[in-house]
Length: 108
Image (cartoon, rainbow, N blue to C red; front, top):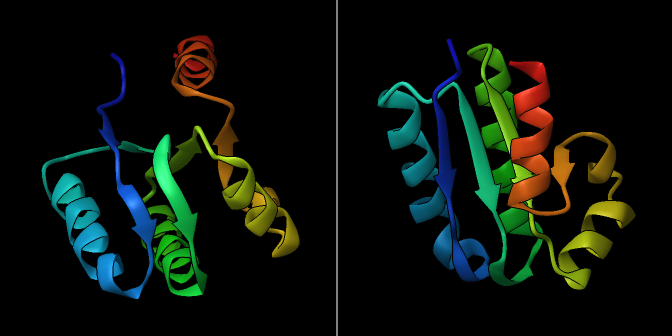
């Protein structure tokens, strides 16, 4: 039986003005039974500290529920932010959606 994977694709800038809406979208996915949430950042142009903070809060919550949060398709700015804050060692990050699917198929 494969896990219930849900994908969320935020767009634009993930900052304090979008963070609450994004958090609520992830909460909705969790309530609908998502076991693995993939945050596809292909349409995100910039993440600030409040956006990163929201991702960290969601990661803690999701891990507390014994579920998984993964991230894919980061642009160079986002990748640099994750590396500078060492969040690249905390989150499960994939180059793109195909890499995520290939990795998850091997686990199943």
